[in-house]
Length: 196
Image (tube, rainbow, N blue to C red; front, side):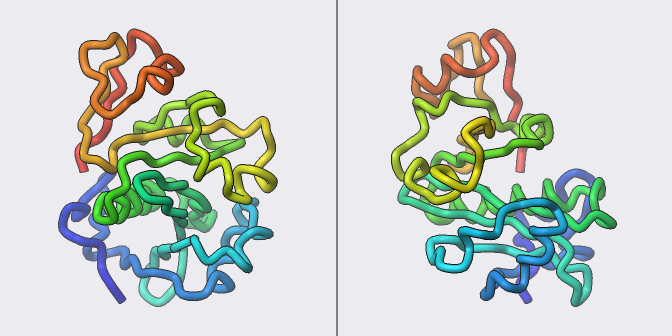
């Protein structure tokens, strides 16, 4: 079992180096029950070999997971789930940070996600809503984007995987954001990305 690496030694008040082991999930059947309990889709996972999943373990028990589909310098963050009895303990934040760190190690610069119910949560992690018009074709071609998630799902974006510490929405600092992406952000607000 691989513990979370040092860049993520503490995050959101949870010392997951000691209390949460994170390892790659080899078989999606191991997480399908957790995803269903959390009302997340599983229909596209069976034959989706582009997904990599990580599970958070409390001892030997899987209590959380997150998935990624990586396409060159962009990735789709998906299937973030924490068992109901373990929610509000910082485990989701730890897994997102771990996934972003993994993306960075693979050369990913931009991370996208789709959500119907958790846009406020992901906003608190530094993700911003973007128009579907600016989503890269690689993300649009995923089954999750094209048919599993409803068209009303919010598309969100982060460039934190490339190591950015913040994006100033008034134009003073646009590190990593294209004008098309940037114009859909919260104009005038400072979007603070947590230091990982």
